[in-house]
Length: 74
Image (cartoon, rainbow, N blue to C red; front, top):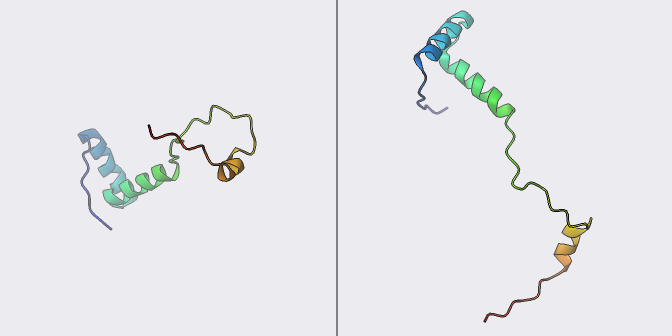
């Protein structure tokens, strides 16, 4: 496990202390639990929007078979 430093507003820190006392655990354990919950629901944004259908269902298959015409270098 590694240590890190975070900045928290005073009211939030006060609430964390209160929650830790009620649950009889550490603030670090509560923060780890919250981060784990947040990461469990994280879904990365898609790299593309998926718009612009080519009209072909076999585009990926054909892309491996076809080679583009080389462009003249001048």
